[in-house]
Length: 163
Image (cartoon, rainbow, N blue to C red; front, side, top):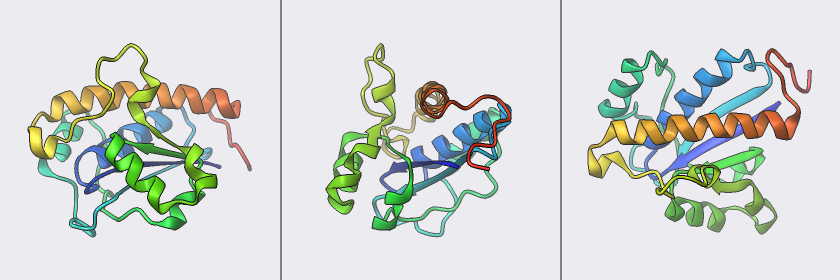
């Protein structure tokens, strides 16, 4: 199984939005048996809480399930994930401080996959209030990520990688 972890600061806005959006894309391509998806935050302020209402609202508007999203903190054991996707450079740096250097290659920013994008970091809607902008960036980035994972792991629709 291929595993993906999305990480932002508090795990209530960007990373759970990315987790739910990516999971929906994985399900749409019948790859749920091949790809595991989770999210975490580098901070501990919101551990155990549901996502921000703005995140939940944008997911509802786009018919994306969000029932099982609960904030948790990123920790060293998260090195087990194959793809560790940061929403911004600050969280990317914070994760690399926690992970052994041998796992740094798994960590990258979501928008690194979008060369044509002027944005290089997913802005935090907790501060900006612009959940639509964040959703648009996350949706595009998740599409690119899924294509990358399918190519990297030779996955096709309905593939049961590793089973």
